[in-house]
Length: 95
Image 1 (tube, rainbow, N blue to C red):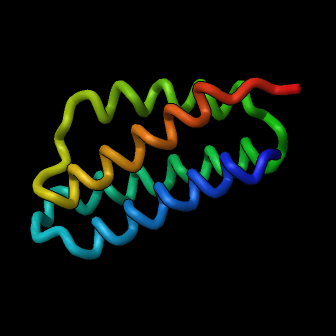
Image 2 (image 1 turned 135 degrees about the vertical axis):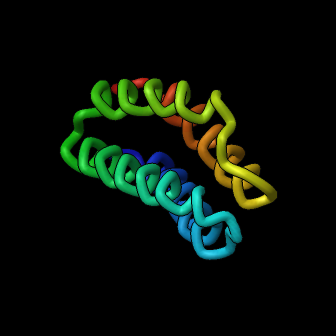
Image 3 (image 1 turned 120 degrees about the vertical axis):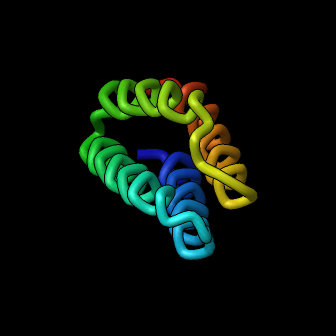
């Protein structure tokens, strides 16, 4: 698996984790936990060369982020980090 995808996923996870710790909105914490769980699923797919499945999960997460329900600067940071990761995996073409 290309290091660039794993690095991009790691950046996204780090941002999610940081945002979850910094948010003052208790109602957002469960959403961050859910996003972190999905990121773990994506990681497992990438590690086992199931890129198509990872892309499918990312597309479904795009719909979730499209709602824009994470609040404040933490939510904006998480949404932006996900958009960057999503663009990377979408552009990835297997050899």
